[in-house]
Image (tube, rainbow, N blue to C red; front, side, top):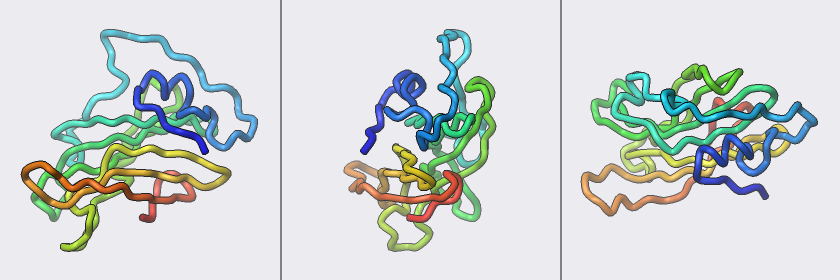
Length: 161
């Protein structure tokens, strides 16, 4: 099983210790150079990430850079700021396009992850994506009672917990 690194630089260089996703002989991922004046990505102010982003997970897959980040914000009709996992894509690793919320909080009043879903690690094995994530209930003060969840996806966009 492949393991996920914690540093964005390692993720970009190694593609989450696995590089090209499904290992199907795709061209090697392009290399990047640091630009101190330009972060890789910053919060766009969209509803789901207006209060900040973090925990980047980057995977080079089929000629496309894919990034999942934790983003704090509000998604109507819920007026409470919660952390969700957003999804972005890039062809060149420089210009990123937000695709929206990839993994949302549990919708039910008793769901164990209704307060937040964040800090993901995404792996691809064959045609299946696997996402490990931290989830927690709604609490104002630590401890948050975090638990680890698993979601799967056939395309890296639509996830089932």
